[in-house]
Length: 158
Image 1 (cartoon, rainbow, N blue to C red):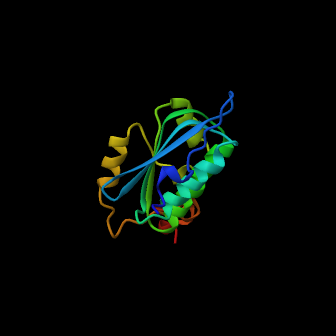
Image 2: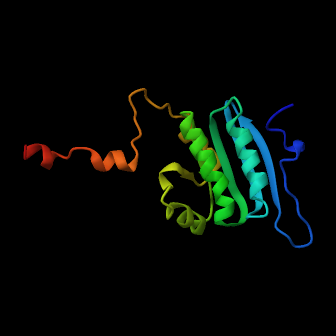
């Protein structure tokens, strides 16, 4: 069984005017690409969360989440993206979100967890960003670590 097989019930398709979310998976080399189309809202968030957890549990620790075909997204829908980003970060992986809408970009960047969300305007741009090697000496600091770093003015006063 492939953990990323969309035929295994990963897609939520509600009818009669209710929110719909289609989920598909593909790979570009070792990079998993999860594509969402439709509505990423509370009624579909469970399926989205399951798909993202499956992707983060796959052999690939590099993930692109394609949101280009999302019609609407709520905070409930966003929750799965945040959890996936945290799971990927905890395993020293990398995740990029592909968005086309400036309103969605504003919505995502206004959150206090914006450091987890790396945004691109196309899958090709995201692939190029992930193709760049991360140096062994590159260290990502949290906001708390950054504000605690000594500054030149503090060091000069000592």
